[in-house]
Length: 134
Length: 381
Ligand SMILES: [Zn+2]
Image (cartoon, rainbow over all chains, first blue to last red; front, top):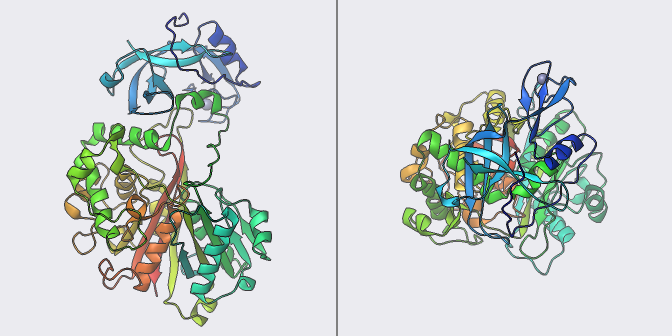
């Protein structure tokens, strides 16, 4: 996936990163959306941890997600200091659900179950993952 | 081992203010502490246990400010339900002989001072940018609940309507006008599908509790109210694998409390249910067992929560939706009104006749992200 070229007026916070999450942000700079998978229980999880939150094994590995999923739920926040925005949870094809905003679309046309894919938006550091309808 | 019947609520106080530009934060905590001690007929020298949460200026700061000499302290912080958890922890400490007069305070002034930003842990980089707020986090639960169970905005509105029927009798309530389902639906959309009237008030103020032993409670003048069951639980997306936003941690805290009390939801005469938003009430009623999952909409409709009208009188002070939601934390006021009902001290227009069993249940944090829940079952002896 390439970094989305559309620019938005909204300024997003720069990920701070830490030794545990740095590979995620390094990959994001290359347009890759990474999740963690546990080799002990076989499950993928998000956000990424070094120890699996499901079985507590430390045998976890990075995996590139297809970046595809569907909307589990959402809400359109009608007013904010930076204008309206749609927050939601997306369930990835690989299983885990994650919190996000929906971008580059008609925010009033969002629906639960709608297919979406990841797009990255720039910050002053590593880009951040967002989702947009397919 | 159980805390059943080991601890009594001997003193309660709700600050009458809803707007306190002329008071300091520590002062508000001390004022509610004094109010609850006066109500109990005790003094601050009697206090040997102190409980406070994230709204306080700090545990050791408040202990020193109030001149307390506790031998047991607890600053468990679980947002709005902290004080319901504190009540259970105070009962444990009393049962174990670690303290005999526990003071629990809540106070703050979100209307007249800057509130600290919500704290983040390891999830910060993966969530901060997406702007989860109380409004949209609860709205996301409502959206999914409507999708899965056909819950409607009209049904949610009935919860606000019931609260407003009660608030008209509370002279301290911020919103005393009785509203209709149409009024709620016609109020501006804040975060779909929640309208402005689906949201609680923002108020300065606070409240406090005195929890004590059976022996001390019986030596005082107030009607006897004791804790007979308590539960607490937490819930989060757990790596994104447990995201199920149509139920809360109340599915665990509620049954734990009922089991300890040895009663069922059918036995409850009055319910204080956390009402940060209408959807919060609807989900909690399902989760702690007043109706089946998905049937909360039908349960709350047609005035079923209105005292004297419906089967389950709830939040007879007007709740957070109409009366008071001090520091954006509604757990304390939930306990206070339950105790008033059990004492027979609620407003006569909303007093439940012969009220001997009540529940105070709350959540804290963001229901649509990660949160805690706590349930307290109270009995008039
Ligand atoms: Zn695992």
